[in-house]
Length: 126
Image 1 (cartoon, rainbow, N blue to C red):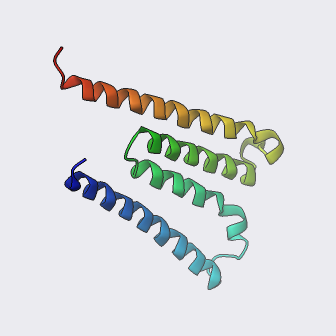
Image 2 (cartoon, rainbow, N blue to C red):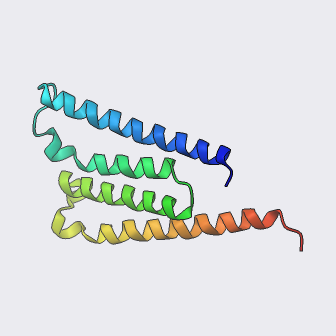
Protein backbone atom coordinates (compact mmCIF):
# COMPACT_ATOMS: atom_id res chain seq x y z
CA UNK A 1 0.00 0.00 0.00
CA UNK A 2 1.47 3.33 -0.99
CA UNK A 3 1.91 6.11 1.54
CA UNK A 4 -0.59 8.31 -0.31
CA UNK A 5 -3.36 5.71 0.14
CA UNK A 6 -2.36 5.08 3.74
CA UNK A 7 -2.54 8.82 4.41
CA UNK A 8 -6.11 9.04 3.13
CA UNK A 9 -7.22 6.19 5.40
CA UNK A 10 -5.44 7.75 8.36
CA UNK A 11 -7.23 11.07 7.76
CA UNK A 12 -10.54 9.22 7.57
CA UNK A 13 -9.82 7.50 10.90
CA UNK A 14 -8.85 10.81 12.48
CA UNK A 15 -12.10 12.39 11.33
CA UNK A 16 -14.24 9.51 12.62
CA UNK A 17 -12.55 9.31 16.01
CA UNK A 18 -12.49 13.09 16.30
CA UNK A 19 -16.20 13.27 15.57
CA UNK A 20 -16.92 10.58 18.14
CA UNK A 21 -14.80 12.27 20.82
CA UNK A 22 -16.43 15.60 20.03
CA UNK A 23 -19.87 14.08 20.51
CA UNK A 24 -19.00 12.24 23.73
CA UNK A 25 -17.23 15.29 25.15
CA UNK A 26 -20.22 17.50 24.38
CA UNK A 27 -22.56 14.95 25.92
CA UNK A 28 -20.52 14.75 29.14
CA UNK A 29 -20.20 18.55 29.24
CA UNK A 30 -23.99 18.95 29.01
CA UNK A 31 -24.51 16.38 31.79
CA UNK A 32 -21.82 17.91 34.01
CA UNK A 33 -23.28 21.41 33.65
CA UNK A 34 -26.85 20.33 34.34
CA UNK A 35 -28.22 20.86 30.82
CA UNK A 36 -28.97 17.14 30.59
CA UNK A 37 -30.06 15.17 33.64
CA UNK A 38 -27.35 13.11 35.35
CA UNK A 39 -29.26 9.97 34.60
CA UNK A 40 -28.94 10.67 30.85
CA UNK A 41 -25.76 8.56 30.86
CA UNK A 42 -27.57 5.69 32.60
CA UNK A 43 -30.04 5.30 29.75
CA UNK A 44 -28.18 6.60 26.72
CA UNK A 45 -24.74 4.97 27.10
CA UNK A 46 -25.51 2.24 24.52
CA UNK A 47 -25.49 4.93 21.86
CA UNK A 48 -21.79 5.48 22.59
CA UNK A 49 -21.31 1.84 21.49
CA UNK A 50 -23.44 2.55 18.40
CA UNK A 51 -21.18 5.52 17.69
CA UNK A 52 -18.07 3.32 18.02
CA UNK A 53 -19.63 0.94 15.49
CA UNK A 54 -20.41 3.72 13.03
CA UNK A 55 -16.87 5.06 13.32
CA UNK A 56 -15.57 1.54 12.71
CA UNK A 57 -17.70 1.18 9.59
CA UNK A 58 -16.77 4.59 8.18
CA UNK A 59 -13.07 4.03 8.87
CA UNK A 60 -12.97 0.39 7.73
CA UNK A 61 -9.81 -0.39 5.77
CA UNK A 62 -10.55 -4.00 4.97
CA UNK A 63 -13.21 -6.69 5.23
CA UNK A 64 -12.28 -7.63 8.80
CA UNK A 65 -12.52 -4.09 10.14
CA UNK A 66 -15.82 -3.58 8.31
CA UNK A 67 -17.22 -6.76 9.89
CA UNK A 68 -16.03 -5.61 13.31
CA UNK A 69 -17.74 -2.26 12.84
CA UNK A 70 -21.01 -3.94 11.89
CA UNK A 71 -20.76 -6.26 14.91
CA UNK A 72 -20.10 -3.31 17.24
CA UNK A 73 -23.01 -1.38 15.75
CA UNK A 74 -25.29 -4.41 16.20
CA UNK A 75 -24.18 -4.90 19.81
CA UNK A 76 -24.83 -1.21 20.49
CA UNK A 77 -28.33 -1.46 19.05
CA UNK A 78 -29.00 -4.58 21.12
CA UNK A 79 -27.82 -2.77 24.27
CA UNK A 80 -30.06 0.20 23.44
CA UNK A 81 -33.04 -2.10 22.85
CA UNK A 82 -32.51 -3.82 26.22
CA UNK A 83 -31.95 -0.58 28.17
CA UNK A 84 -34.97 1.17 26.62
CA UNK A 85 -37.18 -1.96 26.49
CA UNK A 86 -37.93 -1.51 22.80
CA UNK A 87 -40.62 -3.96 21.66
CA UNK A 88 -40.71 -5.39 25.17
CA UNK A 89 -37.06 -6.49 25.04
CA UNK A 90 -35.17 -6.90 28.32
CA UNK A 91 -31.75 -8.27 29.23
CA UNK A 92 -33.38 -11.65 29.86
CA UNK A 93 -35.19 -12.05 26.56
CA UNK A 94 -32.93 -10.11 24.18
CA UNK A 95 -29.54 -11.81 24.59
CA UNK A 96 -29.90 -13.73 21.29
CA UNK A 97 -29.55 -10.36 19.54
CA UNK A 98 -25.87 -10.42 20.52
CA UNK A 99 -25.53 -13.59 18.41
CA UNK A 100 -27.43 -11.90 15.57
CA UNK A 101 -25.02 -8.94 15.74
CA UNK A 102 -21.99 -11.25 15.61
CA UNK A 103 -23.52 -13.12 12.69
CA UNK A 104 -24.20 -9.91 10.78
CA UNK A 105 -20.59 -8.86 11.31
CA UNK A 106 -19.30 -12.22 10.06
CA UNK A 107 -21.53 -12.15 6.98
CA UNK A 108 -20.50 -8.56 6.25
CA UNK A 109 -16.83 -9.54 6.53
CA UNK A 110 -17.38 -12.50 4.19
CA UNK A 111 -19.27 -10.41 1.61
CA UNK A 112 -16.71 -7.61 1.71
CA UNK A 113 -13.80 -10.02 1.28
CA UNK A 114 -15.62 -11.71 -1.61
CA UNK A 115 -16.25 -8.34 -3.26
CA UNK A 116 -12.61 -7.36 -2.76
CA UNK A 117 -11.37 -10.61 -4.34
CA UNK A 118 -13.69 -10.15 -7.32
CA UNK A 119 -12.58 -6.54 -7.75
CA UNK A 120 -8.92 -7.55 -7.63
CA UNK A 121 -9.61 -10.38 -10.09
CA UNK A 122 -11.25 -8.02 -12.63
CA UNK A 123 -7.88 -6.56 -13.55
CA UNK A 124 -6.33 -9.94 -14.40
CA UNK A 125 -6.55 -11.68 -17.76
CA UNK A 126 -6.58 -15.42 -17.89
